Length: 256
Ligand code: MF3
Ligand code: CO
Ligand code: CO
Image (cartoon, rainbow, N blue to C red):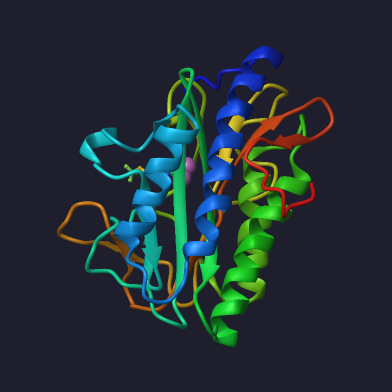
């Protein structure tokens, strides 16, 4: 378990990939409406990456995965496979997770969408999950610990009577898609490895309305909540700086 430290030049390359991934979420956004299939949304992302960005969809070929994005609706926690049969309807909550590979570097990010007329309980889940990510980003700086990230997320989720998924985590990222460390979204402050300048990793909390337990469907990818209640996720790729961190996958709608 060896966490690599990236140079400013390497972080710049990672940022270029991250910015392309962020752009994909921005361009697909107006299409996330009732009646569209998750297959069509995936195609829009594929075309943008390959035709406009001259980049590579980072998920294709990863452990045999065949799509550009993971699109996870309602009780699907993560790794939903885009499908012609999955048509979005009003009231759905949807996560689109995209990874772009540019010049050998990976950028990985995801966001939630509320489809059509949203329900207050879903709006709250989506908002609190985003706050979990933002609160973690706020505390990151050299000298903090990975346990601090988990603690901030778990505390905020549980304060709102939600649970944190423990079976999947964030990860180091660079020229390798998933590298050390594993970034847990739960834990105790002051525990785990120390955070250092130059570390680059994702934070991608998955927060459930009900219990934390997951089940893997027979397609080998789709992860759902065991109790069938909804789940939300937001993901950014960040680089640790001397005084804090830089969000490499920042979208223009965000202020960090
Ligand atoms: N993007 C996911 C993550 O945040 C991983 C997706 S792997 C895939 O780490 F193969 F399902 F695309
Ligand atoms: Co990730
Ligand atoms: Co991702």
